[in-house]
Image (cartoon, rainbow, N blue to C red):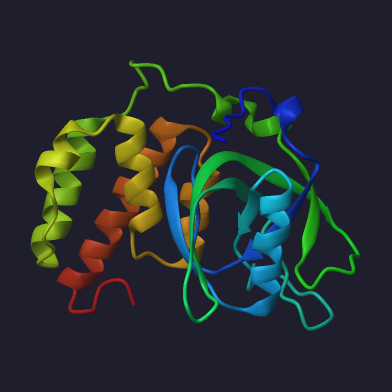
Length: 220
């Protein structure tokens, strides 16, 4: 049954979390995932029995934490399992659709093989709301930078689909798909609003192109 969330009070205060560097999901964006580790297969099974929500979060390589598990960034995004296929070798191929970002209050001590965190959605309640038509995004700047980046790196893109995509879908999809560093992905995730995210996206892309022009291989 399809379910949408329009009130943060309907969201859980504890989430299973999937720490994965370089992978972020944003509200209403779709993130495909290949699940094969036993602990994360168990996580998906448990999520399907409950609210289908998983917290995508990046490890924080700059933070120190004792123990075998890496530290986590303080901001992640909840995604709902909206598609699932079970492969013959036992893997799950799933699609997460972004719901809302969250702040990590604390990581919990749990008996599950996967990690769980107490979270707060209050700061990101606006993630649940449809984007206004006048969202302040400089669409021309985003598209111009994307075209230059695609030309520089000889990327083939479906421009007909891109040209007709709403601003939120365009900016969030590019932010999720971009081959930038985990730190840059985190900056895109934590941007205050869509306008700011678009500005950060343009700035990061321009920096990467400048590195390429200086003789360095981009995105490495």
